[in-house]
Amino acid sequence: MLDATRLESGLLQPVREWCDPGELVHEAVAASGLKEGDVQINIAKNLPAVSVDSGLIQQALNALLSNAMSYGKSDRPIEVSATRDDSTLVISVADRGAGLEPGEETKVFQKFYRGPRTRPGGIGLGLSIARQLVEANGGQIVAQNRQGGGAVFSIRLPISEAMRLPGAESVATGVSPRETIEAEVSAVKAAAARVSSAK
Image (spheres, rainbow, N blue to C red):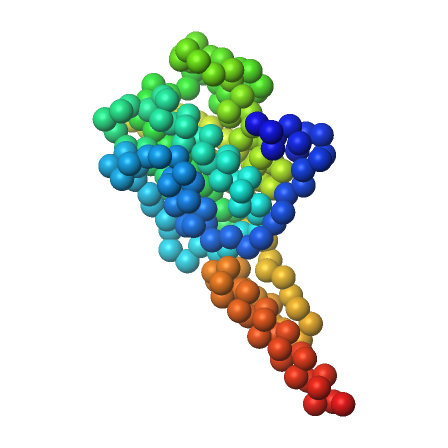
């Protein structure tokens, strides 16, 4: 909640870094306290790294996981997935609860919103904060009902071009953050070697 307030006031700016989508998901699930049997994780292969503030995105994911834990069925696992939709990374949290009432798809992200199925406790800020955190990273968050019952909340983040360094080839976004860093370091060393040999 503090980060969302600071984002609104402009006091907090996202600190972007190249992040592996699978790591973002697994770390958020670990922080949520969900047990192995309570969650199913599906990470698509060869997902590109994304340039985001990992701490803010994980906070947003934690809010979605908390919401799924509150409204999903206790005997059905929460499903968390990461996939690619053209130039967008999509991280989804789905449950098998009662789902959303008509028109709630956007209302649930409003501050202090408490729908007809809202359980006692809380003040209706969790999903609103999640929206702010995602939008601060240039993304979107959407909600919809799913076939077979339940709801799915999706974080959509743009997949951007990797950084270019002088004398280096463009680093493909399909590589991991570690590979990206290694490529950048190699490019710097190569540039330094060229400068040294020219002297």
